[in-house]
Length: 82
Picture (cartoon, rainbow, N blue to C red):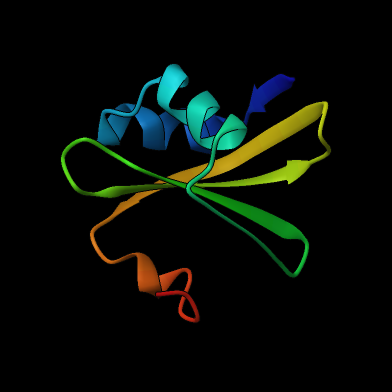
């Protein structure tokens, strides 16, 4: 899988201390996954208890990361899941 990053995503990753490896793991092995409108969301729980949300567009082979978000409450992005 090829992963490309927008400038915005790289900036947010730097600000939030998120590594390339974390983003790639979330994309490849998400704990939660959803498609909303034309954007895809992949979520992976971090060791610190927070969730990494990766918003991306693309296919199985090429993904363009639009932004990354760190949150504590997963139901804000996945409201219909337990």
